[in-house]
Image (cartoon, rainbow, N blue to C red; front, side):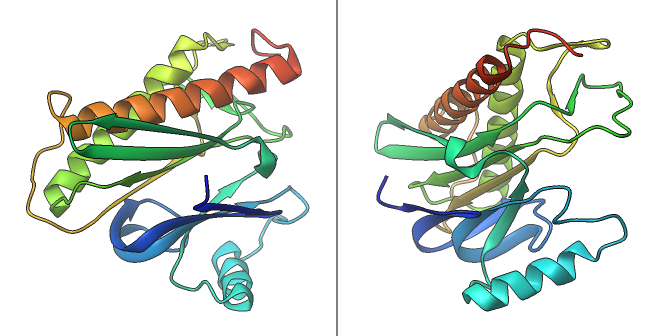
Amino acid sequence: MTNLKLDAPWLEFDLGQPMQALSWSINRPGFVQTSQILWREVSNADLPQGMDVRHWLAKELEHRNRKDAVVLLTSRYIERLETRTASAGDVQAQAVATVGLSNGERIGSRVDYAGRDWGTINVAVRLTASLSSAGLLEAMSIAVQARTAAVMDTQFELPTGIATGTGTDCVAIAAPAGSTDFAGLHTDIGETVGRAVYDAVFAGATAWKMERKETSYA
C-alpha cells in the first residue's frame, strides 16, 4: 500500500487527510484529529521498569516531527504487518495490524505473565465514510468485535480457555468527520470495518502461531 511507510522501528500509516480518530493510544487517547497513525516497535530494553514512557515517546515524535500522530507501541517485528481492505457500497475500509499473542488472555480471566516477554495486537483502521463521534464509537465496537473473533478463530489455547486478545491490545479507527451516527453490522460501514479487521488480524495471528509452531500456552 502506498500509504504505508516502513522505516524500522517505525511504521507510518498515512490517512491521506486530517481525520477524526478514536483510540486508547498511549500518547493521544480518546477523540482527536490526526492525519497519521504510527507504530513504534519496542523491546524490553527500550522500556525499562520505572521509565516515563509518555515522555520518551514525546521526545521520539518530536525528533521525527510527528507530534500530532496517534502512536501504537508493539513488540511484534514491525515488518510482520498485515493490511487488508474491504468495500461495500461506496464505503471502503483499510485495516493495518501487527499481531503477537505471547501475552494472550481469555476475557474475564488473567494469566500470570511475570518474567515473560509480552506481545500485543495493534490495529488501525481508515474509513472513507464520514462519521459523527457516535458513529465512530460504534465503528470502534465493530473493529474490536472483529479483532476478538479473529483471535478466537485461530484457537490459541491458554490455561483459562481460548484466547480472545492480549493484555496490551490497542485499536485506532479514523474517518472523516460527518453526521452519520450508525455503523453497525447491518451497514456498509460495519461490514467493511469488520471484514478488513478480521482478515488482517486473522492473518497476523496465524502467521505468529506458525512462526512459533505453538498451538497452546507454554
